[in-house]
Structure formats: C-alpha cells, structure tokens
Image (cartoon, rainbow, N blue to C red; front, side):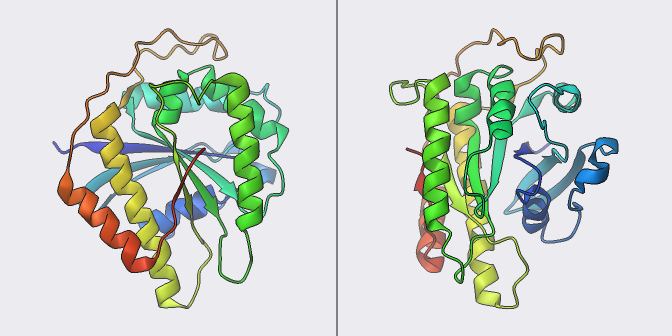
Length: 255
C-alpha cells in the first residue's frame, strides 16, 4: 500500500484552516468553523490524491481558547494514536492579524509539551492565508513571523540546535478569485509545499504517535531523537525549482 501523508492543520479560529484544506482538495469538503457551535463539532478527516501523493488531512476545527481546555486536543491525540503516524503540522495564520495572540502561544505550548521540539519544528510548515495583490500583507507577515520566532526562542534554542530544520513560510490566498492565473500561482504554492513535505519525510521520517500518553498532556514525552537520513531526489528538486520560477513564488525560511 502506498504511503499516506498525514497532515494536521493547527491555528486559531478564523485563521483559514478549513479554507486552506478546501484549497488543497480543490473542492468544498471542509466547512468553515462557526465559534458559536464549535464545541459540538469534532475534527474533520478526508483523504485525497494530489501530485501522486496520498494525503490525509485532519482539520482541527476547535481551538484551545485559554490554554486550559485540553479535551479537544486529547481528541486529536486519540485520532493520531489510532492512525499511528503524523507527517506535517500545517500552522495556519491569517495575514490580517496584527499580533501573535496569547491563546495561540498557549496552544503551541501544549503541542510542544506533547511532542519534542525537533519533532514539531522538523515537521512544520507555516502558511499565511488571505495574502493577495491588492492588500499589502508583507508587513503583517514580517511582524507575526518575528513574534513567533521570539516565542519559540523562549522555549526552544532553535538557533543552536543542529537537529532542527527551520520551517518554510508559504503565502496563500484562499479566497475565491476569478483570475485564473491568480489562482494557479497559489495552487502551485501548495504543490511546492507538498513536494517539500515529501522531501522532509525522506530526511526526518514520520512522527510515530503510538506512544503518546493521554494522561498528562502537558508533560513532555520521552522520545528518541529523530535519526536523519539525507536522501537526494534530483527530479523533485528540479520540479520544485521549475514551479517556483514559472509562477514567481516567494517562499521564505523561518529565521
């Protein structure tokens, strides 16, 4: 059976997680979360095939608002244990946000107390949504990236850890647009993201989730360090470069 790449979307309410999932699937499978009734909803899970990759997306529709309600996160962990692996954390942030909210920090702390820093950061991609040509979102993205970097530096020494691969930052406009070329660019950005995920899997492997403990989510788990196995797939690297050049895609490295 072909490898299934399992993606967990994370991020605050209204960040555009469900819209991004629909963007990846090219159809409206994930409904936008409604805060008023989100407590009754569970994660939505769908599979698709894109670029010859079998992909399963777990859309974390409910957000830990105050850092104390862990029930929904435990539900996610239950699902991951059942699936037995995870390949990518897709951290979604709306480019209109002007600051890195406290509840987002609390949420990330729970994740970093459940997975090791290298597991999280080596399997992380950061996506800013609602990026477009008419609205200059670059300044906001720079501010939010800096705040996220400072927050992680407080918890993890990301600069001096040779076992950590810094995540890449992608900019997507998930709103429907009638300009076909405009949509093609952002779909191409998704293609590059998935190709990089496949590359990362060959370097870092997947996160085995079978040993995750549900009793004490905030206790850091004892896990072995990821064993790095560098592989070189020239065809994939050529394809990534061709897509980036063709659509003039700008992807930055988190630093």
